[in-house]
Image 1 (tube, rainbow, N blue to C red):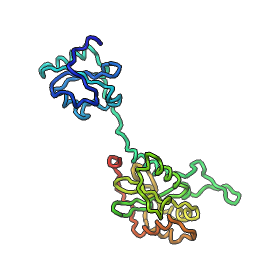
Image 2: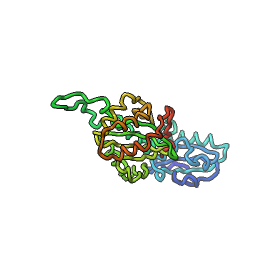
Image 3: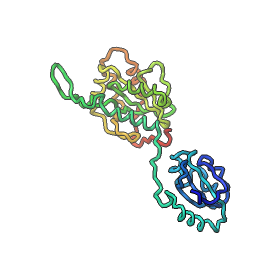
Image 4: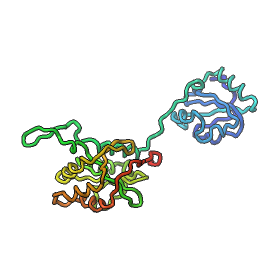
Length: 289
């Protein structure tokens, strides 16, 4: 547009800290020279400081180097008159539109934890509600239709929340912990329990996912504790929680599983210190980046 006023300077959105500390009228223009917004400020520098401008998020999504702020300087007494005059003349696209509201970004660590917790509440094959036994097709037992439950919490520098898993949850955890971007969410596991324990660092707590890989070990334990599981919400996800952690110790001691199991050894080593996960547990997404 050739009838723009004569600007005394311009900066990109990224360079907004270079604006002068003077009163003036600013013109926000995109990379196609399209006028987006006109505004006024007693201090151009302060108006655009940090991200306090009410349309900063909207402009920044277009690109910090693609948005340009051009400006003229004037007296404070002329700000209202000149701003309205330029708005009426140039009719910027956004001056009379609503400010777009954007949902806050979700922590990728929090999102991955939610995904894993959701998977514990689902069976390996959601569509398979039946199984074959001795030539008969029968419904699957309720305790075999979910992958995991929260057994309790124990304190070791910071809270360790124990999630006992079955149905090959380990392969999901292995893929997650090996992923190029997600592996930073995990902590190093003791070599004795490698591949059966996955320590997810949720900042305020460590979630220890323990897989009972062998069905001869997992099935009797899940069957034993199932009547004592309740629905419980953690990190915004509904999971199953054991109401009395002592019941896990009892189920492990009743187990007739004779083959060596690192997962069984680990659970037996910490069961004596397990406490019921408190109802007011709060995993804050804002801390979990």
